[in-house]
Length: 512
Ligand SMILES: Nc1nc2c(ncn2[C@@H]2O[C@H](COP(=O)(O)O[C@H]3[C@@H](O)[C@H](n4cnc5c(=O)[nH]c(N)nc54)O[C@@H]3COP(=O)(O)O)[C@@H](O)[C@H]2O)c(=O)[nH]1
Image 1 (spheres, protein in one colour):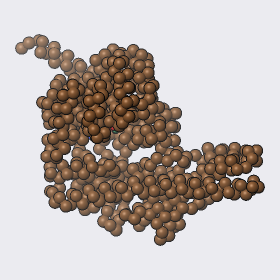
Image 2 (cartoon, protein in one colour):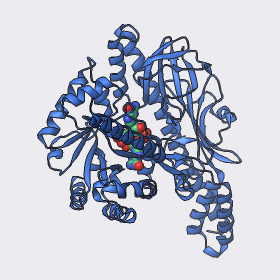
Image 3 (cartoon, rainbow, N blue to C red):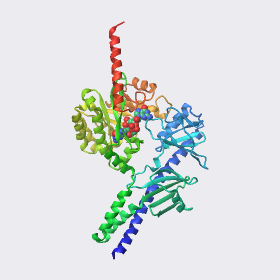
Image 4 (cartoon, rainbow, N blue to C red):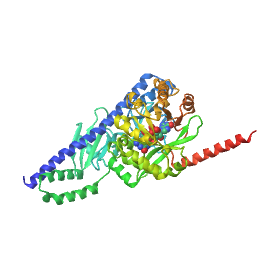
């Protein structure tokens, strides 16, 4: 074919492929939005039908059960005087602020509800009557994309303004939808797909920069037209592409690694019988260039999908060595617990990285505990090899978030583990009438029968600590003892506690 015809055909094929891509992105956003809407409606229906008194212990139990069973909801609660006065999340009342918009279906939306955890990004609340549900504000647009610079957004059909967005979204694009449910088109800057929800008034939008279409056209054309004829075109397009590149979450994570935007907080782990601080869990945090903090529950799943998680783990090891190396080298009984992702477990490099880290800071294997979630055991053979290698190097291993993932218990017996971390969801139920409250007793009995030491996580009250202490759980972690904090603060508080213990011992030695 003559080059101009081939170029035209290449453009056509590229447009088809790009349209498919943005439609898939928009569909993903819509599914997340619809999933959230369904879970909010279901939660409200269950609470309304229960006829339980708002904020009574029984209604709190029900809210926690709803919360545990809802993958998209952060919490459900009751509203009085424009504040969530009790919720499945617990903690202090949350002021809702001013409602941004009331829909004709009776929902009021609050886009900026501050969470009650330090560094937590604001949440979005949907309220109907005296019920409210909290969700991560960016949840619908936190979809994985591999097109550079793609924009994702959610608009409300009545309001016709952008509700949440990642990248630029032009509300004028809605006009292309007319009365239909779906439309895909190209404007001078973007290839755009708009999808209307059949369940709610929300509209999902995805848009890829036209530069992406140019790049795709060039790729296809290169295969159709002799290289020399379009070489110049490709170079020009590549420059255009770089100039226009906007960042997807994956791109942003790559930049974050390059720009060193990660840091680590440390949450104390205590010996329950004595209250002594015996270690700390290293928890990664991301501070973006604009100063916003992103929690690992948002970016670790994206890092796992995009195979960046092993690079983040390596960065965490370096940061822990920098922060804690000296202290660990002089305190062999103190440990840092590190979270490893499934991909780390299935890579042969991880044991080497940990040994290098220990050698670099002069610390001992006893200074480390490796935490592996149940997801890490899906490939049982390779998990067994890595655990064997870790323990062969005297590094102890804990199973994290126990009870929340892998459905079978028999695998546990086949693994050579040291610790079992009892998940926060079971601790929260202690002392309540929820059926799940019985589970913690079974977990303790099972761990003991398997010779595993236990670390209970998410302890927020003395009553929970007493319950676990009485049942012989050795270690605990939770806001009751200390929230995740910078290493300097951990050290300051560790030393104050050591000093207080010495003063107490001296006082006891002095006699009456
Ligand atoms: N692969 C990696 N995963 C990591 C890393 N750092 C963290 N994570 C995982 O991200 C998840 C969320 O972690 P985070 O937001 O830091 O939350 C931790 C604690 O802040 C929270 N916690 C602890 N005590 C309490 C409490 O009393 N109440 C309450 N509401 N929350 C509490 O729990 C999280 C620790 O969980 P766990 O790891 O299961 O012990 C989390 O899954 C992290 O594992 C990383 O470097 N790599």
